[in-house]
Image 1 (tube, rainbow, N blue to C red):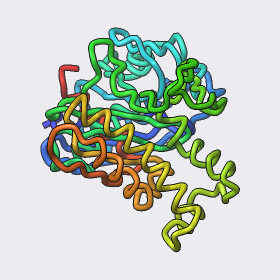
Image 2 (tube, helix red, strand yellow):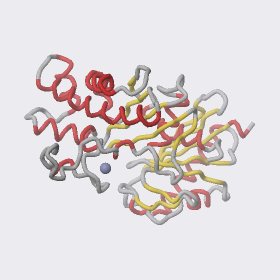
Image 3 (cartoon, protein in one colour):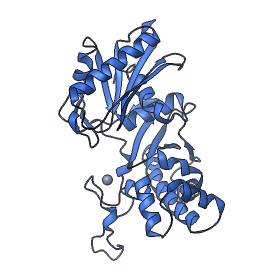
Image 4 (cartoon, rainbow, N blue to C red):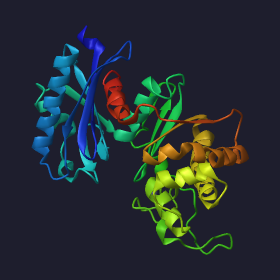
Length: 314
Ligand SMILES: [Zn+2]
């Protein structure tokens, strides 16, 4: 029955989280964590991850053949080598598959982007469990995104699909009479301009609140928007419309109608939703009513999705 025990890991900014889950029932059998910091050498990260897997196996009763692993950054698909990772600089150039697998008797370790595995987790056991297609957007420092189509994680031919945060929703001025002014704050680290994450991430919301002369404490801002029809509600309505603009792209391209919103700023979804729905209603292409719901797995989504991924032929 060991093939029923799936194990997933999630390399986050401050910790390595992991857990074991029963493949057929979705029951969480064990959870664990190891501390992590950007300056920890790669070998130490790998040995902590392998130790966590062994601990989870002992708790869950039996080693699975493959381990799933989610990590922020860009990877070379075939080798699991990290090409770029802002919060784990010591892992760049390292193969996560080889490094973690080394401490596990060479077992196969399947690597995937952290937002993608979180989407896969939410669709399996979280907010999207009754849907076969959905997109997850996490509103944090940036905007992470993952797309599940017909119960399959959609990563595209090169593995980098689903970067919803970097869809452009605000055009770069070019001198055309239709242009608006150039906004320095809409320049995105990805090299583009006017990306969704420059407008609706937690960082963007704080910046927009300060610009509007409002509190940049997001829970305070959201509460003020709930309490009255003032400038806070207007700002969150506007940010909600920008979020809706990003979602409308997914409706048009993929016919996705179910959206799960996570991340710290996702806690303001109740006050973002009216703006998002308003825009989706204006731009609806095709039929069907979109639904926008909060993520439910919290920080478990990543390792749960990674565990599920270990089952697939990915
Ligand atoms: Zn971008």
